[in-house]
Length: 468
Ligand SMILES: *Cc1c(COP(=O)(O)O)cnc(C)c1O
Image (cartoon, rainbow, N blue to C red):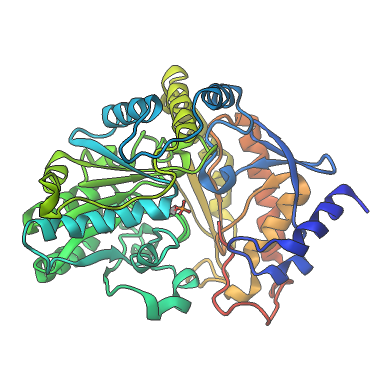
């Protein structure tokens, strides 16, 4: 038995993996990873995989990065953790100062959590609590976009709209107001991203006008709806949204958990619309992909609505045990240093151009409806019929075939349904981008060659879609 197989057996005897129908592993091998270096992951049999999805969108400066690793080791010798209620420490103060400095003007307060979903819960609770403190408790509903994803906890799921992740739990969810997404994949032929996004804003405007008295906040993923299939839209939508939220007295929550830290081409996606949200949620790449942490930034005005004598009961009495963990703060500080010292946002422009040119030929593929890109995120949408854009039936799991081919060729390319995408670490080289494009082209050719998929399995969850 190979080392991979032996670790896989031990794993499957005791683990239950995230976002996985475990029975799949009767056919699809589980890959135990022994070590990582830069863009590469290496399994126990010595095979290497280029991590094209940054290990679920968190890794931006490569695995086993010595600069981030050293900072965590240094911190480990000083202080591993202290509770953040009544106590504080250097790394969390320094990180907060730096986040306030690099985020859009007006975001002057930072609250921490230990994962993205918890960060979303904080923004949702804080936004409603703000209105309660202002004597408007009826403002308790959230306006969301179709096809959005904001995490897995119950309230975060409520403001999301990817049926695979939420439909089973419908009975548990909050009653939200859903508005059609500005998703530019759905635009009419010949219409620009900007015009489509502008047009779709009319739905949002109408909902805001109608529900302004009961709406606490609007929550959106700026520019890219990630788990919803890397669907993209134009920044003009965010500009219109900020203006309308102000006009109707509704708060604005931007979920930059996936798109923050350079993914869209700017440090934060909202910079492209030149707006400041009332809440900015960050996680994933915040620590370079090293340790779990989330930050929710908000304005002084929100903060002041909670600031009062204890007896007023206006305080935000919310906590996560590992809030502001010093090791995670150290990883985040090292990550911010690299962004600054290596001029990463500027350097990424050449990589983004290479991602474009290396995949441009796929636009002509008979089963590719669209190759779309925003900065360092690129997605290729496979369809059954190019002319009508009729999707492949989900049961055929075409993306899974691309995934399996890529693994054979030494790349971790885990599609979302029929959407193959690159969200690579920023330390990827132009040659490695070309390699990914080559593997993707082969994988798409293989996956779309047959009229029916190979991996149809009627025992699967009815909404199965291979997650990112
Ligand atoms: C990943 C993600 C979340 C949830 O973060 P977790 O750390 O997985 O809880 C929320 N919103 C968006 C946009 C995400 O991509």
